[in-house]
Image (tube, rainbow, N blue to C red; front, side):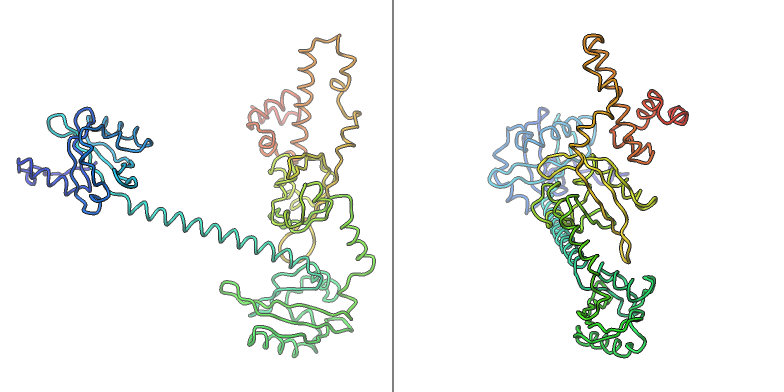
Length: 468
């Protein structure tokens, strides 16, 4: 607390009444307490606070701490203890009102004359009201953000699942910014390399005047109906429609290609049957975005994850279901980005109702323009792993032969060592030998992991050097 530099010149009046008026005017409320904390007098400096605490004068003779709510008792004791050693630091207490809701006060205390303690309080109701409004505003923003994320997820799922080619292009430059899977196939088959990123590159030069007319109509009216345009390098025409979209300060065209007569856009019979097989495959299949959130699944994955409908999975992080810890999915996606496809990774799949299954996962990054996406094939191998005792180390698999010849304590110790070593080796394999991630997956500190690596002679001399 910073005090006056020349108090003697300003505070010469020895009149107690004048001093009391000064103290009351300087704070919203002032309590005069005895040396035991009993209320001896109360003065109000705020005309707004006095009605809220009307009846406080009837509490004279009561312990001031007892007139506060339970959470403020300890603060009151600390405040009074500090006052005996000098001016106290401010503390937030909640003052009970005789006939109304409690009032938040910011209080300081100082020693008065004749062993009294003066408690000065400032009314914080306006600040609390602002804090409450801020909290409500933040909650409203979070709710709106959640709704926007749900809408974005639904949009992306519908966008990617559409059987017709749909793409987004900037209205100013006609640069293609996003395409769905059907459009990716159309771009690859009809427009040459997918690196052609301008809308005009998709169509024959002779179709450009009609394309520009279509886009001008969309700019003026917000939508342009189907116009037949010839695709680049193609001998057939497709129907093209465009809608104008505005997002923040940018304008986009959403262009839809439709053409029942254009066999290039439709899947060949073999690919169509392959797509049908993916839906009935006994292995769980999942497509996620670059952030690991589910975009699409097949029924087998819903069965493994104990979900009733695709909508329950869409927008969820795949790490909610796949992996012993969510960090496993992060490691898996990092490996997909840096090293390419992952094959037959053994891990755990957790169902929404609490079940756990041993699974093998193969994954790859999906080709195409726009944001990154990944495909996962998940196979339940629980029965196969459970019945394969050939891979169990001898100290565990030969328990029947060891019981009676080796003390139980040694059996338990050896089995524990084997399991611990297997867990460390599995974590290192999952993390591609990233020991920081492996330690996090195992719930160990890095130093503890290095000690165990040296103990089990895992990782060779590097582990010993790191541990040192």
